[in-house]
Structure formats: C-alpha cells, structure tokens
Image (cartoon, rainbow, N blue to C red; front, side, top):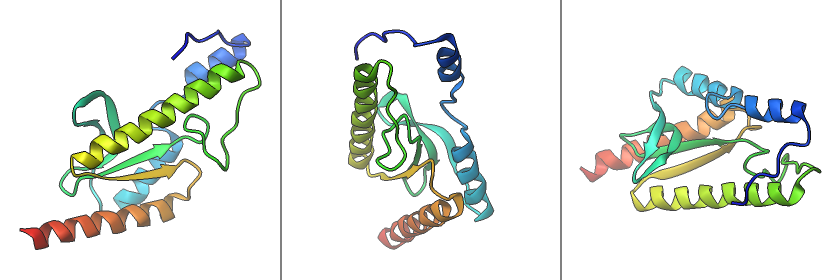
Length: 146
C-alpha cells in the first residue's frame, strides 16, 4: 500500500478520522435484529491465524462469520463512490481492502467457517433472517454429524 498522499482538506481529514471501524450503525442494527431472533454471538472475534483481523459477528459453535461491509470502504458495486481527490490512491486502497476480504474468506473457509458478507445498505431484518437461516443449517448439520 503506497503512503497516503494526505487529505485534500482539514474537514475531509476530520470526517475520515471520525469514521468508525466497528460498532457502526449498520452493524449495531444487524446485531439488534439477530438478538431479537434469539441468536447469541461474539463481537470482534479474532480470525483464526490472523491476529489483526476480526469477525464482526461470530457464531463460534456453528462456525458462521458475519461481516458488515461498508459501501465506501469495500467498494459496493451499487453504492460505492470514489473520491475525486487522490483517486489513484483510493482505488489502490479499496482494492487492497477487497483483496484482504477475499483472503479472510479463504482463511475462514479453510478452517471450516461459513462466511456471510452483508453490505451496510442491506435491510437489517432481512439480513438477520438470512444469517438466522445459515446459523440454523450449520447447527442442524453439526447435530446430525455427531
């Protein structure tokens, strides 16, 4: 990753510095919806073998990892935008984020986890229902495998 060229203004720098890395509005809404469905989970759970990476919402018994990806930071094809200032740097940065996401998915998959990626713009209730179904399937298959 090349060195950041610096912000285009003090206001932009302040706004970017204030962006949350975890417990974002979308993540909290999903967690509330999952809890309302009776699901219990771990938050910011470490990715096995990757000490600097964490799973946003982890169901450790069923090995389901849920990530809530921000449209800007992860390059959403529907809502992602590209800044006009320092555009080349941002393209590299967002590309690196996406490559890291794919690598994390690979690492978790090799460890037997199911990865669920949810865009921040997804309706929390629908996203929670999707996760609920996957966790239920994983739990049922774990029971029948024993």
